[in-house]
Image (tube, rainbow, N blue to C red; front, side, top):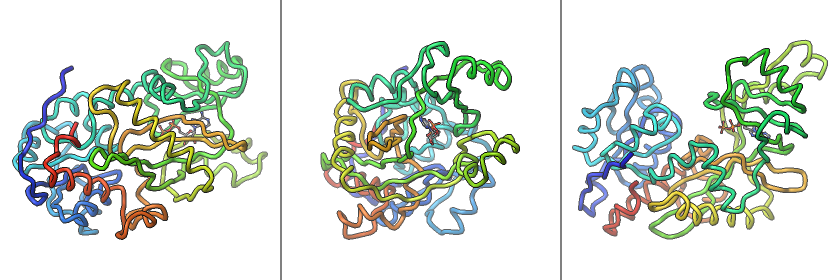
Length: 351
Ligand code: ADP
C-alpha cells in the first residue's frame, strides 16, 4: 500500500508546531519532553484514561475519543490544523494498527517504512541477521527441536501463553492440551541468560547514534515464580507468562558498551538497505538476552520509543554524561524535531 505523504509546514519556528501522542505507554515523558524543549503538546486519550495526564499536568491540550476505532479523518483534521507531529509508541501502533498508520496524512516522527519489517518476525530476522547480530536459533518444525525452545504464539499479548519445551513430544503434549487451535507460533531457542533492553537513539539531524539507557522488565508471573520453592511451583501449577507490569533501570558492565554501540550502528546502516526509505531513525530498542559468556542474543527489535525508557524521565546515568539537562528519550525526540525545524529539515525526521 502506498504511504501517505505528510502535509508539511515550511515554518522554522518550533512554536508553530505541536507534539502529539496517544495517552498511554510513554506519553508522560513524551509530553514533558516537548515542554522541556519549549514546544507545545497535545494528548489524545481514550475516555476514562485522562486522569494521569491531568494529574501530572503535562498536557497543554487533550482530545478525548470514545474508542480507538473512532480514530478518523476528523481527528486527523484537528491534528493537521494544529501542525501536530505524532510521536508513535507501542500502544499507538497497537491501537491504531499498521495499515491505518501508513495511511495517515498527519506529520509522523519516525519512519513508516520500518513498520512492516519489525512487525513481521521473518522480515525482522532477515534485517537483524544482515546486521550481523546474534539471534536465537529458530526451528522450522517441532521435530527439529534439540534443545529447549520458547514457544511464542503470534500476537500473544505481552508474552502470555508462551511455554518452554525440550523435545517434540513435550511440545505436542502442551500444545494439544492447552492451545489446540493456535497454529501461528515460532519455536525459538531458549537462551539462558539475563534479559536486557538497550535503548538507542539515532538522529538524522546530528548523524549520531546514542545509547540513552537500559532496562529490565518486571513480568508477571515470570518474576514471581522464583519466590517460592520448586516443589511449591509444581504444586501451585503456575503458568509462566511474561505480562509486563513495569520496568526497572539497569546500568551495564562498562566493557559491554563498545559492542552495543556497534550493534546499534549496524542495525541503522542495514535498515537503509533492507527497509528502504530513510531507514531507521529516532529511538529504538534491541531486546536481548546476555549469557554467562557475555554473548548478546537479540530476540526482538522495537523501532520506536519503548516503555522501558520511562524510569528515565529525569535522564539516565548515560544521558547525564552527555547532556547538561535531564534528557529523557521523550525530550531527545522533541530536541531532534526542534533542531530539524530550526534547520529547515523537518522532512528528514518525518516518515
Ligand atoms: P515482547 O514482549 O517485547 O514482544 P517477547 O514476547 O518476544 O517480547 O518475549 C517475552 C519475554 O520472553 C521476554 O521478556 C524474555 O524474558 C523472554 N524471552 C523471549 N525470547 C526469549 C529467548 N529466545 N530465550 C529466552 N527468553 C526469551
